[in-house]
Image (cartoon, rainbow, N blue to C red; front, side):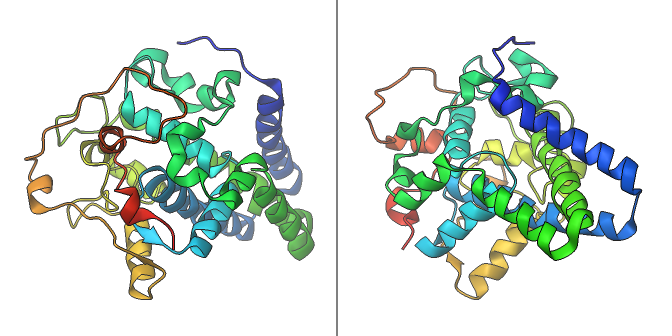
Amino acid sequence: MKKRDFGWIVSLPFYAVHVTAVVGVAFMGVSWKGIALALALYYVRMFGVTGGYHRYFSHRTYRTSRAFQFFLALLAQSSIQKGALWWAAHHRDHHKYSDTPKDPHSYRDYGFWYSHVGWILSSETEETDYSRVSDLARYPELRWLNKWHVVPAVVLAVALFFIGGWFALLWGFFVSTVLLWHGTFTINSLSHMWGKRRYTTTDDSKNNPVLAIVTMGEGWHNNHHYYPRSVRQGFRWWQIDMTYYVLRSLALVGIVWDLHVPSQKVIDGDVAPVPAKKPARSLAAPVPATEAVLAGISSPSLADAE
């Protein structure tokens, strides 16, 4: 396991949320209404992670308006997984260097704990490399949100307290957030350990139907690493992908459009995997076309928010 210098400013709040959730449930008792509230906000915010952080900001697999782009960032950041630009920059590096020592959370190189949660607490991953997200960094509202990334989560917590008191705050925020964190983190750790490989890729990504339910479709991880440009990660009809279903519904009413789906040739496995890229480049340079392919980013000219 890789040893890193962990920043206490980041780590203490993370552990405090866990302690508050456990102690709060022990003190207030288990409640079916509380569990329902926690799960409801878990899946609402999970869509912010999967449909926002991942399929929109990281890979630009569909287009939307500038207003909805901002809403996606707000919803995603209510999960307290840092700013949308921070998340996208690190995720693009994950695809560029997948399962190599330069991957921010390589299970192969750094072990389960670091790939699951240690990397996000490391002081070495605190900064945002804006050169990796130059297509997004031109929006001042996204840069502001990236700087003040805890604001959406604080607003959610305060709103829950005023609406439902300590009960709503405990279950809707603290318990839901702990579940959401570890549900999301399973894709960085367990989906590179546990499951089956349908496609040959240069990494250890695997498909896992259990994780697909937990993460609204992200468990079809081998599919995703094989063809990351796809908005749809469940390639087959039986591969449940709730994030894609939500995005399809939003497309029907014109909120999102130009959803990039895999061709039959891609689904059949007739696309060669792209090897992880190792050379570094200038900090001031925009994302080149070859790196956009490596990260599975759709053409910026087609993906810009309007």
